[in-house]
Image 1 (cartoon, protein in one colour):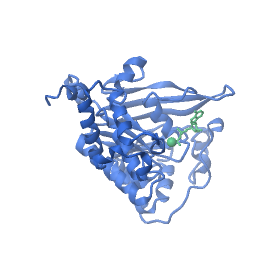
Image 2: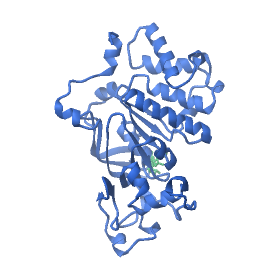
Image 3: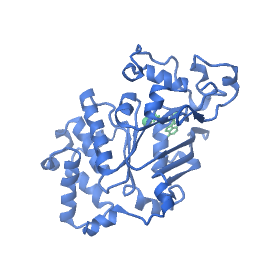
Image 4: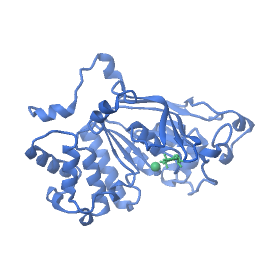
Length: 337
Ligand SMILES: Nc1ncnc2c1ncn2[C@@H]1O[C@H](COP(=O)(O)OP(=O)(O)O)[C@@H](O)[C@H]1O
Ligand SMILES: [Mg+2]
């Protein structure tokens, strides 16, 4: 402590006893629509709800197009112009992030919650050093004296396992894994309590993927960081997450502790996804899921998974299943769960 700038970023609000029991993040019925250039409104995610505690990691999984990135962009209030939150709440430390004015939210984003974007490691500026880009992430948000900013750049690189002298290098002198580490360092510049990482291991080779996952897991524990890892790799979730949210067609199919959901999946979609990962799914044969996820413009009636579901009965075609408690602290949206 005794570092006034530290006090500035740690943001320890006075907590009432009840707020100590409150999850850090409480997302309720988040719903997002996109307007197409033709003026049609498409519902990309609907009624997505989950909570996250400090120091815990949530994995969000599902095939491409199921709304994972949309949900995270809505959370960070970074939806593109065509996107709009049309319902729900995002309670962070008790405050509804969606109700804050743009200026209030800008002050809190990156200080409270930060995000490593899908594919961002390829978006580093090629003509500026990595150190410069991390420095900018700090000074954009914090009015720190220069020497303190310099110290923080070194600290951040060290935190993510990059030798601080490499601050003077350019992105092309970094490997893919190091560029991803640098992106994580940037996201952590203002000591957020929540880090969202969207597909942080996609496009990296297997060994490097494991290193990035180990890094995120270490940061979670060392910094008591709440973590959301968006991925289509269930192995990543098994390694690094305590909770998992399975999304299908913009909705929550299943949600619960990883150890329960992965050993006793209650939604046929989760079960199928797990079968595509025999290492976690129990040594069964690798199987891809036949068919493709629904298009937003052409959503099936009833359960959105029913056209691909091997267990579907008549009711699944006509009636939308509600997300309801099943098994041990699990939730599944399936009539048959
Ligand atoms: N800017 C946009 N305008 C219209 N539709 C979009 C836009 N961005 C994403 N979508 C649609 O929203 C759905 C969810 O996309 P996305 O959130 O990127 O899924 P995921 O991250 O799970 O792959 C997809 O059907 C996608 O086509
Ligand atoms: Mg995505």
